[in-house]
Amino acid sequence: MMRADLRHAIGAATLLLATWPLSAGAQDAPAPQENAQDVTFDAALARLDTTSPGLAGEEHSVRASELLADATRTLRRPTVTASASLIEYQKTLGVDISGPRDNAENAASDFLTQLPGQFPPGLQQIVGDVTQRFGAALPAIFGQIPDTFEFQTRDTVFRPTISAAMPIYTGGAIGAVQDGADAAVGVARAKQAGGRDLSRVNLVKTYFGQQVAVQLARSTRETLESFDRHLSDAIKLEENGFIPHARVLQVQVARDAAQRAYERARLEEAIATDALARLLDHPGDISAVTPLFVRSMPLSPVETFLASVDSTPQVRGGDAAYEIADAGVDLAKSRYLPQAFAFGSYNANRDNAVPIDPDWIAGVTLRFTLMSGFDRRKTLQAALARERAAAEAAAQSRKDVTGQIVRAWNLVEAARRSFLLLDSNLAAARENLRVQQLSFAAGEAPSSALVDAEAILATTKTQRIAAAYEYDLALAGLLAASHRVDEFGTFLARADRRLEDYK
Image 1 (cartoon, rainbow, N blue to C red):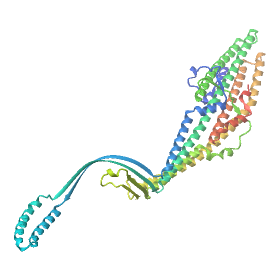
Image 2: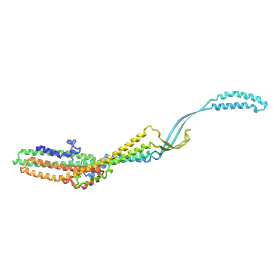
Image 3: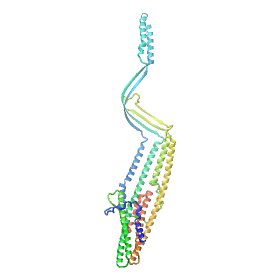
Image 4: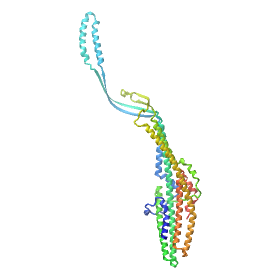
């Protein structure tokens, strides 16, 4: 029965270590180095901000969103393009000349017929003979002329042009795109703020988790040292005939269990140290020197933290997502409205141009879509549905954040009260152990009572460590949920109970 109680006591000393993922591979973890660099929490926070790839990536994402939003500011400006074309072409022209040819033949025949009458009577006979011969030859002469005349040309033309187009009215499409881009910046910034808050919570978890491991190692070492003394005293009592050897063996078993608990705590301390070094991208071992802390004064009312719900990243991101959906509705509506554009084009090489090319051209185009292959009505309905979904998601975000703040506030208060209650428990456990040590030395108490007293003290120390860690972690969660995580250092500075004060 005594051995079962001992295992329970030693197990309680390592129970808290299961609250963060450090136990995997504990058997192979090296012991912490004695020359580890001391790092305060403020220094760790400053290093995290400069070395975290996640935070740097979020910064780049925000910058990209801002640049895209800036790019949409010029959508109303004209678009000017310059182009150059090298064109080789061939042109064939066909002209129907059968009509003019027949007209010319008839005119010539009429002229020859009237020509003899224009001469004196003595010559009319001679001129008539001549014109008669010419008239007989006219069909043969005009017969050589084809019905159509074809002309073919081939050339190479270099055509540089400058063109411009400027939107005059887009039905609100440009404004919708700009609003959507601005809302996307809001989403990126909210994501960045949320990632920053979570990174700080993770730092609190890892940094003070290393403190937990150190405190547990210290507690188990003190327990081991106590059992070493108990075993030494038991051996002396046996040698003087005050207790049987069985009691010495019972103390020996308890001492060996304490040894195993201490070795396990040392391994967990090494793992916690490695986790902190990796989080801060530190080349060597580091040691968290800012102790676990608790502020004995109660927190300000939960309403104080609920007042900042609208400024939290989760709510801001939900509102920005709604603004994107609202811009999508405006964009869908713009497809029902006409669009007007001004355009112009100038040929920079008019001397070497295709005959049909204008020297310059300018005008205004009004376009209205009568029918579209993409159902505009269904598109608008889908945009409205996304807008309603975004509105519901934003409302749910507010409810979720409110619940997170209330839960975290209660956890902080529960941990604070638990830590303060453990002060009296710790004093009672130490007094109980002192009494049992005296009784055992006098042969009035069995070794099981001494082992139980040591187990109670070890459990109380572990519970106090757990309460302090729970307070720090819950406080970080509360401040992150209310987007006040930068105030964690203020709470730390105002703390009036630090675990280093309890030896």
